[in-house]
Length: 469
Image (tube, rainbow, N blue to C red; front, top):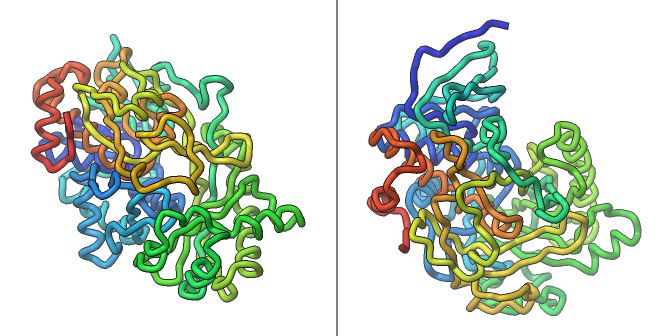
């Protein structure tokens, strides 16, 4: 195989083009850094485009928007182009607002934002190695259709989702839950079209006792522009008892997309497999597709409004909630989330609750930031949605590598805290912070851990991020 050395010497190289990586590249390039971003796929967006995840949950805490900046700019572009209705009420009554979108539209908008920022892009490209010296990454090795190449840069950003670059750099990490290394289950999302949304809505509203999570306010279900809810638990349980469903889960999540009559079903649950194992991922893909087929037949046979529904797709690939968490200069804990710890180095906020899907099967734990213990979903009241928490800069930097910053779901966080910060709106905020920090480090000729946090915070605020210090 040919060995190539890229001629360009970059200021910032971002490995991974998911939501966090894309926004890291946009932020770094907009702030003047010569930037390259690589990704294994042929498009940006990660889970939202490669795994069929939707809607985005959530930019809000109650009625207060706590994630702005580049993420909000992206939403506005999607709305302007007809690819999203924007932020709409969440009729699942789990959070206050969700943001449906077109995955194809998101690909286009992210292409434009990265290109307009001036970043270079290499799709269909994989990280395969690196060279480091004296606690600093000198270059990384990549492989694509051109062969193997080496890329040098002043700062590297790990946005792989699994901490691949950090692990190659010998940064310590925690795999899964601290007590037993168990990881949250993976999910293969199912998208269907041809649903009679009005018939479905009426079926729910005509028998609300069967949908206890709607207790907060039935008017939300009646009036929301885009339908989302959790339910048909009894029918689902019966199908499992009859052997028609093999999904180790207790309920079904229904999310209407920006297209009328099109729904994403976030329901399959693939347990006891690893998202950092090729064999585990392969089994998960196959199990996930089998579960999606079972779910589709159940919907057509048992759920009003789905009688004429057709499969749009499963996937395109399995969704991974969490694998490795790096051990950074600080580890975010569940108490930090629940108590909204006042970090002086805050670079982002989130209003999404701790949301743990049982690694072993049925059950989902949910705790909002102003709660001290788990509260059953059907007992949520509107007050719990107003809480949010701070995320500090130190969870993205390491003690071992002076020119590495880590962003995305693999940052330094406990199993429980990661279950809160892992969703895509939060990833946009972390990515913007990572890219901005990298550009500052380059301009000041400083190690990534030595930059002035006040300079970073002020720059983020100047660029429309929400930061409470």
